[in-house]
Image (tube, rainbow, N blue to C red; front, side):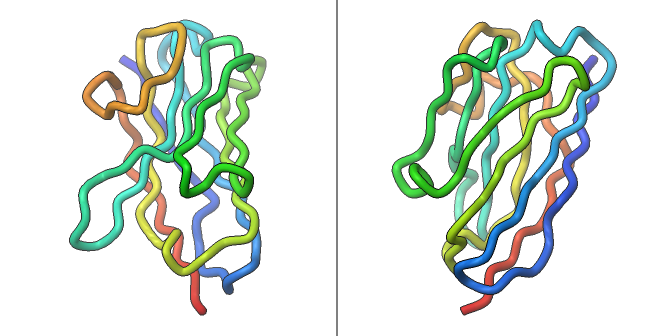
Length: 124
């Protein structure tokens, strides 16, 4: 089992920045590729970003590329999502996820463990 706990969400004005954290425990962190997903009210969960086990390979949804940066600290078993130039359409619950794979995936079903989510609200 892997336990994932997100933090760092909150209310921000458009144009601002937030950094989300995902703390992992329970199994060897470096055995898992990691990802961020988000779900807005009335919408399906969507891919945001993913990172490989080593942290050397990243992938982003087109809607966040150039504004968000995913990273991980394998020493401290933590993953991050730096979100800059926030837009109201970024408002959602953000979830971190872990997959027993080398590279992260854009497909939510390929992830084995999920956090409880953290709310991000961006006002215009």
